Image 1 (tube, rainbow, N blue to C red):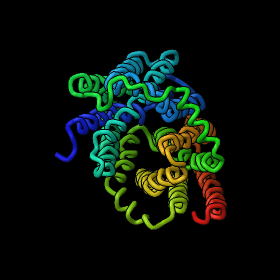
Image 2 (image 1 turned 90 degrees about the vertical axis):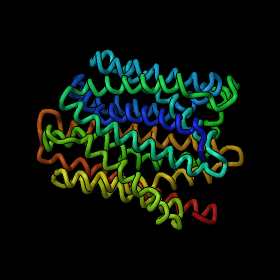
Image 3 (image 1 turned 30 degrees about the horizontal axis):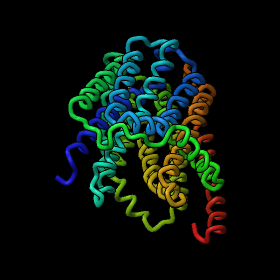
Image 4 (image 1 turned 135 degrees about the vertical axis):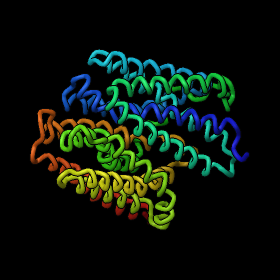
Length: 401
């Protein structure tokens, strides 16, 4: 066997965690607005803040995981996830959902660095790229399964039962960690303190060129997150409750599983910043597709287009950030990369709430509802222009893009 047993155990745990998370996440805006009763503005703000935290907390939780061992960190994580999902399922109210989402965000923040760290430590040196490809495939399979389960659970039982199913998957993951997972590193190693991590992050983000790039890249993530924040509510309000946005969004991970490697090979000769700009252009075009009269085929084409944009952008953005890192700072810079997702999710949630309130309110369908997508397209086009200017300035300063 090329990869050791622990590698496959870690990926199995990741599959369960992603299964649970994406089942809840695809239904989150429906849960907050329809079941709990938040307004669209409140729903967007809460969902955006929750998503943003999942990109800022792992850096700190990863340092704590090093100190208490990966195994203890995972046991803590799935305990938090279980109570968070259970609270959402049993007590769907405005008073409890914030606490529940805080548990889930903290639990997820422990899972991200520990599982990816296990994959890194258990992959043979000459098989690291293959190991992470398997890991990325598992993440998308888990997302596909979670969204597939969400629709029949919502229709036949209710939104809260999706959360209860996620709680059950968290129990299975806890059991898998308890009985089969063994820490791949040195027990109780000290690692860097949270203060040291924050200092290194501060030094990285005060790199003007990196910070500007991350802010510009957040434009892409602002558009991408609308697949979860705007599209489910928009689809149900314009096409009716018999539509399954959970299954429609599944086109995204399916496309990535099938086409990521061919797309990467096709664009390998393109300079990183040019590939990133292409990805933003493609996702902006998806917003244009959504701006037409809503229909299921059009929604599916738009979601598939988003996947193409993600495949063009994501690996090249990671490559570009890595190339900007000084010697010995690659890990810190890669951690900073997720600040673009943090900003995009936070702003994207607030924007989704404003757009739904204005163009597609809960009270009923408006004839001008598709116009909201022009605003999203405008953000994409502005991002393209600014990234192009950035690429020209980078070329002038470094002699290449």
